[in-house]
Image (tube, rainbow, N blue to C red; front, top):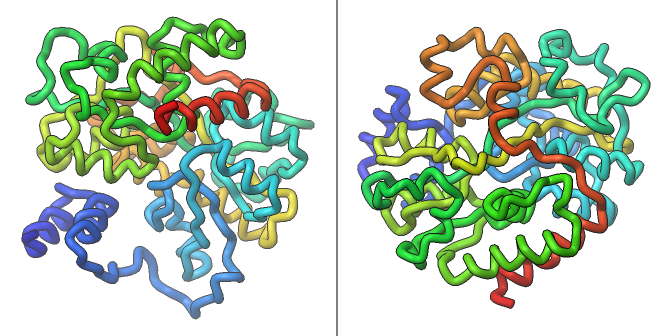
Length: 374
């Protein structure tokens, strides 16, 4: 590995920090990066709020205003799926802020483990797009349980030089194509995989829980199982495998294609004819948050223009703060497959809808059996 070259690419904006750190790790190299903000006297980790989030979001780039204020990063803890996160918190794991997606909000609220946010403590709240927080089960007495942060798509990132361009790259069928046996990658969470298989099978999200459709989606994922080289929630490992050619196609979020394109890897993020999976995720505060004031500051940091610029520029995700989009031209947004109007993107795909706890438990259990080969 040519560290000087990689450092130059990072400086020139040809590589983002997340990818740079992943390459160093893969090479067995560690590096202490220059802090993003001036450091004040360090607080002990237990004095900082804890952010329980998806793998890949545990980065200081996402919470810069919090670091500016407290001189220290929040504590990060990660999960691979929102059901995993909820199960852990129901078992007694207490955090300040967690990061579910829209279809999980009613179930999370029903547990009684979360509190509404005091929007008067969120300086960025006036700039948040109402269509992203006026979601089923989210607003109680005018206050939100979830502050929307990021929105985007789950689809297929594929190698344009390794996939035969016969039209299948524009269909979910690409991830079931037997020509690529052993070269398909999948996200390991049913929160993505099950829903995308449902799209392929033409199952409406409002009818996911019927016995017939449950069996149909499970059969589809079992059909795919022999083709899959890896199931993982580590998006960086999927990106590395796509870059090396070990994988020719993988289920990913928007960010993977953005990262790989920035490195010159010939990939595209598919726009399946059946529709991509679309979602909105955000921040929810635990009712027993040990640091409620810092928890609100953490949520406010996630809603900031700085967080939005990072999500859009480095990851290709949409952000809830409308002012974040003012940092980019219409051409730059179009190149990332984005629009400053989230409804244009979300309505063009298949938007997740809430399901019952019984369905979520059955879905996750069945998917674990499928991954294990049963």
